[in-house]
Amino acid sequence: MDYPDFALKVARAVASGEYALGVLVCGTGIGMSIAANKQRGVRAALCSTEFEARMARAHNDANVLCLGQRVVGAGVARSILDAFLATPFEGGRHEKRVQKIRDAEAER
Image (cartoon, rainbow, N blue to C red; front, side, top):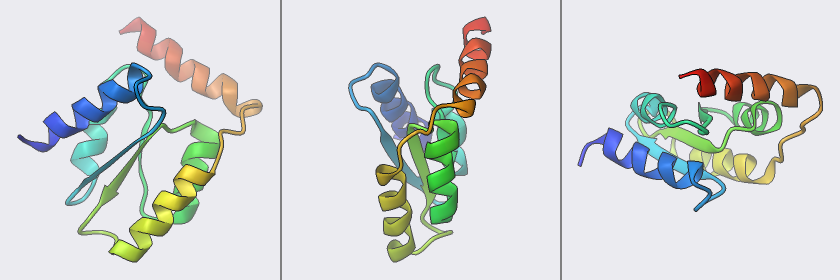
């Protein structure tokens, strides 16, 4: 299997509601994020800091975290994952922005 196979399997499981959130890891995380974001309903975020992970969840309602194994060490990856899992979507002013993304997906 190649990285798109793994990414799409996780993305489809999240999009279908089988899982609320997903986590993908490859060398840089870039390929995984590109592939996962092809699935309607998935908002995959490539994060290399805790701040990015918190903002991805809080402001963008990201539902898939992508990490680069060559980019972040194991300890940093764990703290990014913890931040991603612990941060809820804030909604409010961010909800209309996420809805615009959903609307664009529906046009495809």
